[in-house]
Image (cartoon, rainbow, N blue to C red; front, side):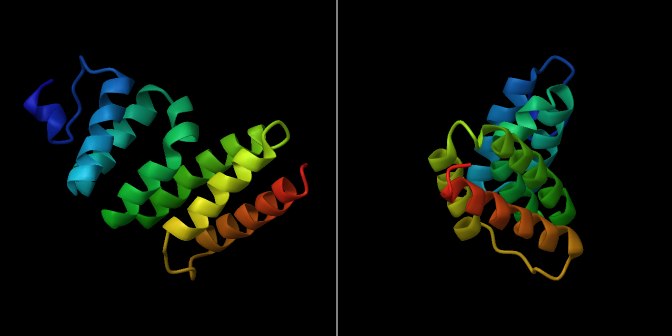
Length: 130
């Protein structure tokens, strides 16, 4: 892979999967701004990835100081979980509990307040097996 992609730049030859894999590595290394750019690139190339990897991307975005981007990616991931809730309520509940323990933000922004209200509602539905 190119040095440009490793640093979080766009590489026309890279795939969404390559950008996603590097985003995860860069976030692990603590290079959150590069990870943020790589997650954006991956999700632009394949929007369905945002539902499956939105939580991890949101953590990188928060660490890079991009709170509204983080909230948007968590919203995508929440919608993907909502689609799975009826078939896999215990899995969805487990993921949502991890979210609640793993993301700390200032709850003053309306977008975050609404997101956490939706997380609580889906967690309650999953607990009831709906």
